[in-house]
Image (tube, rainbow, N blue to C red; front, side):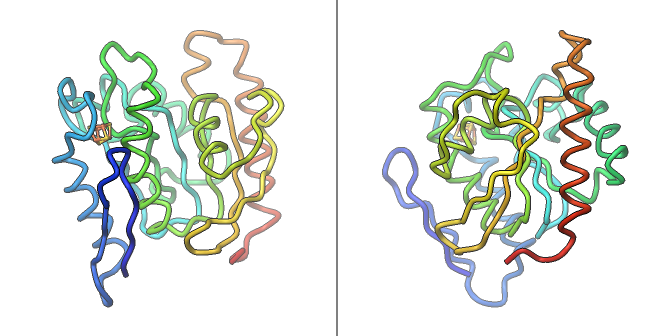
Length: 221
Ligand code: SF4
């Protein structure tokens, strides 16, 4: 397998693992590369990188905005309060957490949990692109406005507002592989920690996601 992406600095980011190397082994190499990454200033304040976890390949990929405090400490995605909520929502969809891949737009925690900056997102994007190529997903699930906006930008989809696009299926084609995929944005699980009435919207998004998964169980290559 050979893949090359340009980093924000214009350097070639290559994953030339050669034939016979499994996607899972390539993902491990990618995680090691992320662990050593100093491409943006978030490398200065992180404790640990949080590349993501789950099966490789994976038909379902959940994408948050950035690691938080607990994730930064443990190196694992969605292990804090938002992670507990996500695990419950997945169970409502009939899914075990271990059955889906979970990652985020940037792999290092922004200080004080601020939103990642545009240049930080751009610097980290080659890693997400490489992950999507290795995972061959059918469905990408960006969680929250920021992750959704970033993915829509990546695939060239108009983004009128988060409210208008959330809970709906958006068909895209991966430029590199030519594979068809579907993006289904949902609210970020953490929304209910600061806005409890949003629970209804969050659960509604995940019900729609579950209905989509049930209605299209096959390979959508
Ligand atoms: S956020 Fe991404 S680009 Fe920035 S240092 Fe971490 S891994 Fe590298």
